[in-house]
Image 1 (cartoon, rainbow, N blue to C red):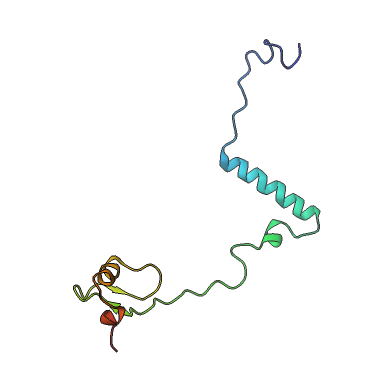
Image 2: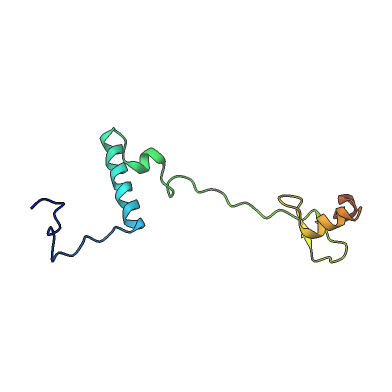
Length: 103
């Protein structure tokens, strides 16, 4: 009987399909072995490990630069995406200078 015969493997449970996590782990092990085979200290040495060396310095929060005139609790640093209240204020003809926080 060949492997394609209908009677092949009768009574045997099929092999379980590996989970994505197992597949990823298997690929990582293969890449690690290949990196060592090529003269690197392993995959971590080749790619850099996430935990080695100096940790990144935490960024300090940025002080707000603009304040909502309608609600003083709403502030914006001037970085990233404009909040809705800034967009609305500009659409109504206002200026960012109107909301600028004076020190």
